[in-house]
Every structure is written in structure tokens, then in C-alpha cells.
Length: 320
Ligand SMILES: Cc1cc2nc3c(=O)[nH]c(=O)nc-3n(C[C@H](O)[C@H](O)[C@H](O)COP(=O)(O)O)c2cc1C
Image (cartoon, rainbow, N blue to C red; front, side, top):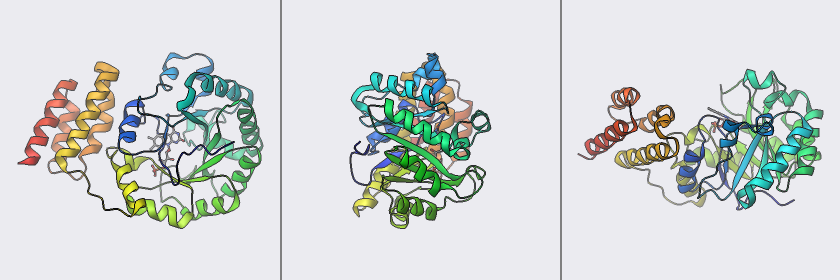
């Protein structure tokens, strides 16, 4: 099976439940993101035809290279769902990614997400079953371990059972999102397997992207929180990788991108988009003058029209 990645050192947008919906993913692609991942999707939910779960499979027009990330732990069910996803999504689907890293209690208590790192034989069986059913490469995203460093032996199990590429978020489940990601664990996995390894954790700018590349020798870079409120980070990382100069967007440009984000969410979700906007928009304001006042006003806004006006006024003020 060929690599799921279309270029050398691809820069990928991490799956982030509640954030990386079709609107945000499309925005990141417009700034140079090479491949996007859906939010994690419950294999069981898809198998039941759950309407909300189905919305996770909507793809943006400019998304040409997408991974659908599934979570679950039952090999046969995951295989059936992977087959269906391949049939439905067609050529935009680059791979089926299996979530073996989610630390959330409600996920691990069912034996899903990072709980699979405690049951490597089952994790291997899941990969093998999905691989047999899938028309596209099968990849796995996992962590450094549950409460200790077990990622090398786990990676070998995944590779032996047919995984086509691996993404490592180098924190343990117990660490959740605390501390720093351990790049040496990614280097160790890269040295131990022959499939491509994507490095993930704490890439927040061009410098940290280069550090991830150089310290781990990984085959691709995955950006999560560093892209929230900063979808242009992909342009910055691409420039760093190419050794080219990079100029960050000005404050008015940042507000313009925030406005575009708001308008696209409104177009996609109508008035319900307000909830989404309250999550995303404050992140665009970090480091800006009067950010806390504007954040408070955005939070109190009762409509997308009001939000639009606040952003337009702030952009105008910032240019004066
Ligand atoms: C709000 C949020 C939601 C996340 N949802 C998922 C998910 O659905 N699937 C997954 O594999 N990882 C998920 N993650 C983990 C990220 O993909 C990524 O591995 C982690 O944030 C570390 O990368 P970063 O330091 O670049 O953010 C999530 C992280 C955050 C902060």
C-alpha cells in the first residue's frame, strides 16, 4: 500500500474534536495545510447511522487529501465502517486513521482511544481487520504510552499488523495535555519502524516545526492547538521548511481572517454557529491591544451580524 502522504514532509492539521470541523479545515487548507483529519468519529455511531455523527464526514471543496479518524475497539465493526467510509468518500479520502490516543475518560472507559495502548494485541487485531476492509491506507495516531513509555513496542505491533503510517503525540495518557511532548520518543519510534512516522506535539511556529523535524527525523509534521486562531501557521511552517522568509499577518489581516471564519461558520451552521464562534474567535485576538475587551464583547454578542460588526470596527481601529 502506498504512503498516504502526497508530498515530502507534509504539514498536517491534527484532528481536534469540537474544533476541526469542515469550516476550520478548509481555512487551514487555504493557508497551505497538506492534509486534514476529521474530528474523531465514533465507528459505532456511524454503524447506527447516527445523523450527528454523519456530519463529521462532510468535506470542504478545497479539501483534496483527508483522513477520516475513527474510534472504537471492535475489529469487525471498525472494518465494516471503514469499508463504508471508503465507498462513500471517494478519491478525497487518503487514509483511514485509527484513534488510539484519546485520553478522555468517557472514551477510555469503553476500551477506546488510548485504552488500546493497554491492550496491544487487540490494537493489532483492529489494524489488521481495518486494513483488510479498507481501500485506502490505514494509519494510527497514538501516544507515548498509558502511564509510561511503551510507544516503541506498540508501534512495532501496529506495523506488524499492517499500519501504513503512524502519528505519535509524545505525551502519555496520564499527562493528558500537560508538560511538553517528548521528541525523543518520536525519534525512537522513527528509528524502530519502516513506515512513515508523523511527529505531533507542541509545534506552534516555524522554529518548533524545524526542531520536530531535525530532532526526530520524522516524515511529516502534525499541528494541533498551534493552528487554533492561527490557521496561517501552515504558511509559516512551509516557509520555515523551505528556508524562505515569512511575514506574519498584521492585526487587521488577522481580524479579516477571523471574519471570514465567522462568515463561513454562519453559512454552514446558521444561528447555531454562534456557539462555534465563541470557541474560535477569542483565539484570533491573542497579543492584540484591547484583546480582553473585544473578547468580552464577542462573547456577549447575540448574533453573527453583531460579531461581524465588532470585528470590522476593531480592524478599522487597528489600522488607524
Ligand atoms: C480540543 C482538542 C480535541 C482533540 N481531539 C482529538 C481527536 O478527535 N482525535 C485525536 O486523535 N486527537 C485529538 N486531540 C489531540 C490532538 O490531535 C494532538 O494530538 C494534541 O493536541 C497534541 O498536538 P498539539 O500540541 O499540536 O496540540 C485533541 C486535542 C485537543 C486540544
